[in-house]
Image 1 (cartoon, rainbow, N blue to C red):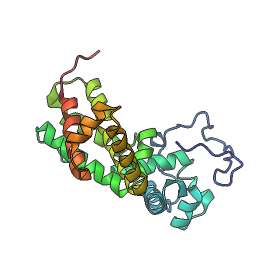
Image 2: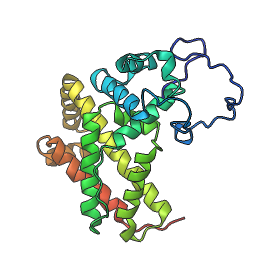
Image 3: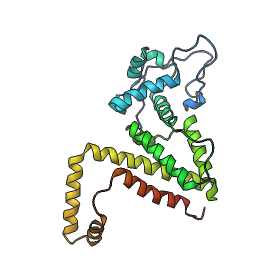
Image 4: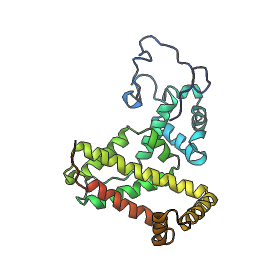
Length: 253
């Protein structure tokens, strides 16, 4: 999670107190608790959606580290200081980005009733979103999204898994397992693609270790594993196991 900037940093200007407005201790911490508009004054020149879209464009092209309030303001043709009227701090910008990406799901009005099929379709949508936005998996793992689109996704997941008979707590835990697997798979894909030479050396090292005779179970696994799997095939196979774990009845505490 990115750290907060100090008030003296030009990318995080000090906000003077204004009469009649909440003090920092009184203001809501979550951006979702703050109204986007107060209903007073002229229509804003920007919206949370346009700000999030600009930030996502920068992150997709250059990575999350390239995203700053200054860069987003420049992309919108706005002044950096004026952007703080819409997004009080950098963490709020990250929340807007996360939720905007969550708006890319195309969820059906109602589940089909086939839990496995619905979860498989949802997993493929999520992996596609992660592949479009390489910065997203790592951010989502450390800063869970709580915005409207995240709540819509959560409600859909709970509806899909309702036929399992699992309690609400167990289904929320299942969602965390499900999402965590897909995010980590997407991260692994990125690592493998970025470090092909390192990946080849690692495979060679593991084969040498297996051939040494010191690790018989590793040698047996390598002897029966066959050639490296296509990433999509590996994802589907592992997804079957994850869904089976989700659907398995377990005692709730």
